[in-house]
Length: 299
Image 1: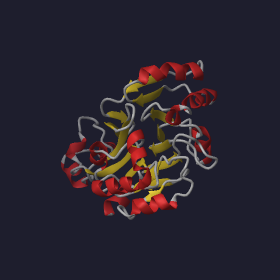
Image 2 (image 1 turned 60 degrees about the vertical axis):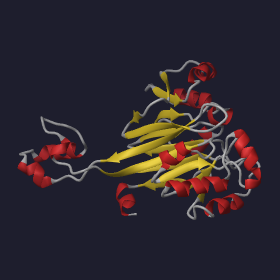
Image 3 (image 1 turned 135 degrees about the vertical axis):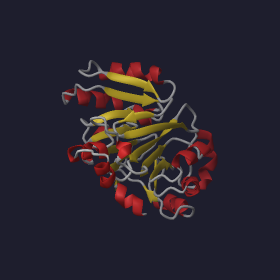
C-alpha cells in the first residue's frame, strides 16, 4: 500500500487554511517529502504524518514557497534525536542553496546528503524518476513508482525443490540459498505510480511522465483562463490546462494544487478542470489517498 497526503496546496503566500507546497508519500513505514514550504511541520503534525520517518526530501526547485520550511524541519529532526542520514534531492543549483539551508539549521546530529536530480534513483521500494518542468528557473517533477512482482507459483516452487521456508523471501523478490525469484514468480504485474509536477507550464515531459499514472498532482495556479498570459509569463498552469493535460495523459486521478493566494474559492477552477477531466479533484491541505495494488488492478 502507498499513502499520499497533501500537506500544503498554496503558492507564493501561505494562508490561514493553506500551507505552502508539500506532499508526503508513505510506503513500507518510510516517507518521502516532496517540497517543504512554510507550514510543512505544522501540516505533518496536523495530518498525522511522522516527521521522524522522513527518509528523503525531493525538491522541485528553489523558490522560497517550496524550500523555506526545510531549515526548521531539519532542526526539529535534530530535536527528535534523529541520527540516520537524510538525503535532499533537487535540480541544478542545489549546491547554491545547500549552504544557506545548513547554516540556518545549525549543527545537526545526522548527515544531510545533497544530490542533484539527474537520473532515476531508489528510495526504499520506490523508483523515483525526475523529469524537467517548464518554469522560470530549473525545475523538475517526480514520478514515483512502486513495482509489483509477478504472482507466486507454488507448483513451480515444489517442482524446483525449494523448501517452503524460503517461499516468502523469494516471493518478496529476494534471492536465497541459491534460488532466485524468477524461478517461482510470473510476469511483473502493474505497479503504482504517483506523479508530482509543480511549478510548471503544461508540457510534453509532464504528459509523458504522467501517462497512465494512478495519481497526478499538478500545478493549477490560476483558476481562470483570463490569467493565461500571466501563467505563461510566470511558468504556471491554469486549471483548465491542467485538466486537459490529465485527460491527454490518461491518468486515473488528478489533484489540483499550488493555487495562487488570490484563489479563495476553488469551485470555479475545479469546474474549469472538470470540463476536460470530469473526475478532477481540487486538492486541499490534508487530502489523503491510499493506493492498494489489488484495488488498482481491478480498475
